[in-house]
Amino acid sequence: MPKPIDILRTVFGYDGFVGPQESIIETLLAGRDAVVLMPTGGGKSLCYQIPALIRPGTAVVVSPLIALMRDQVQSLTQNGVRAAYLNSSLSAAEARGVEAELLAGRLDLIYVAPERLFLAGFLEQLGRIPLALFAIDEAHCVSQWGHDFRPEYTRLGMIAERFPEVPRLALTATADDLTRADIIRQLGLESARVFASGFDRPGIRYLVALKDQPERQLADFLRAQPAGDAGIVYRMSRKKVEATAASLGKQGFTALPYHAGLDPATRERNQERFMREDGVIMVATVAFGMGVDKPNVRFVVHLDPPTSLEAYHQETGRAGRDGLPAVALMTYGLGDIAMLRRLVAMDAGSTRLPADTQEGRGESRVRHERLKQQKLTSLLGFCETTNCRRQVLLRYFGQDLPEPCGNCDICLDPVESWDGTVAAQKALSTIFRVQEGFGAGHLADVLVGKLTKAVERWGHEAVSTFGIGTELSRPEWLSVYRQLVAAGLADVDMEGYGALKLNAHSWEVMRGGRTVALRRDPVPVRGAQKPLAP
Ligand code: ADP
Ligand code: ZN
Image (tube, rainbow, N blue to C red; front, side, top):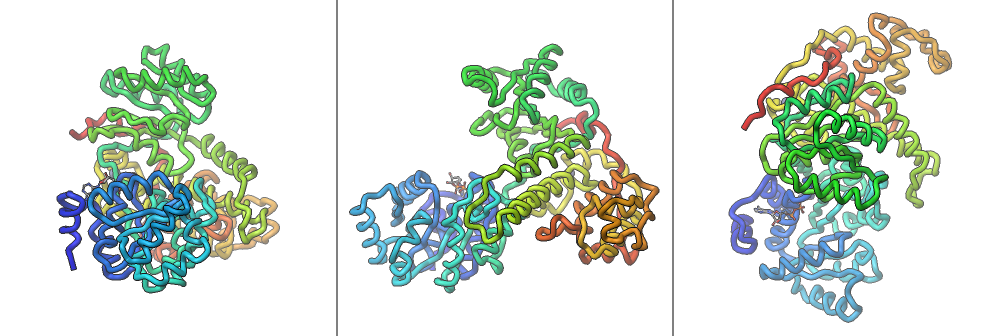
């Protein structure tokens, strides 16, 4: 059997593997399934192309992107690999030609669109030839909660039943917990090895500050940056974009606005100046950034928080593409959190939902809303952590960073923490007393002894922890719960309306076997003054 490294060198002309490519290839060669989460450009294709060449039989690659199939097949055939595709862009005669090659066993790889796979007779044909593996590209398309949902993808689960001996590989650049759980469940990949990698951007320094006077904080931050640096400042609304750009302009910065409400000519002109000139600050809504590839963006500021850690990762990832040090600053306040929650609720009310869900429409909407709330909770956990931010961020993407990074506000300037062990015990016991069926808001009401309608309805004024937490305010208890979840000392129930649940770590804390450090309120922009590592 040829070795993966030899194929990499002789067929593809590269010297060595990057990231987990080799382990993924070994997993498939051993006949096991894999789930691969890697950002775009991380090198996912080789993970199935090399096993396709080593394992006997043809590899079936399911992809929804016709242009991508064509490009891949073209570059593979240039490398002498026998590859072809089947999708709606082929004439009937061309498709018949490809099928004949496939049935004759003359293809190493066949790329197919998902709807093509389910055309009459095609799976029977596949059943008659030896198959090397199934690769399911853009696997997040199975998730109804994402933007790229494709109904045909939900049928791909049957591959496992129909071809149980053929190893399967699901690949995606979308890596949040919920999408990942959907991929694993729907594609029957419960026993697959999960590989998450390539999400770290070590050159970016992460700073998070409590929002106080945002425009002043921004100006202070900008003055601490070397003159002539280019950067992006994200704001939540068009109005705020205009106001911040104008205020920076008055203070002598070259700041340009960018949002979908500007006429296309102005947008284009501003983008052009940002790309060409030195030291332009683009003040923008999230409308800005797609396809903007300026290598020397030195900072990205979120003056209002993003809606999820994925959005945060993607938007901050626009800084430092040249590999030189860069800074990502976020400011957030309680007002933002309330606003984000409202947006989540509004969005859930207006989103068009997939028609063929098994759940009723109303129930499905509730679930949709809950999942968005949970994404928000992860973001808040990131904001409020007392641990290295990069570790929290990468953990969200399923990637472990063994040591604190040394390049985030918390590593550079550890937060003042207090011994929250007793508070944590009270908070966790309350979860237990209400039988793990309630969210943080209700739990905080119980702790401070607030007689709300819900408390009365469930008789929670009678539980032993009712009113035992008056030393902290309700918002402080909410912060305690967020920190507990962020530290993995309690879980949020994915299926149960965001109810908080206990886990093994919670019990350690409640039995007194573990102390808990909680953070004091964060202070404005820490770590910004420290020199960036070369
Ligand atoms: P993805 O599918 O994850 O977006 P690709 O598979 O298209 O990424 O790979 C991105 C780029 O990296 C391609 O140009 C590819 O040729 C290159 N690449 C992948 N693996 C290696 C490697 N081991 N050595 C060098 N270049 C690689
Ligand atoms: Zn760190």
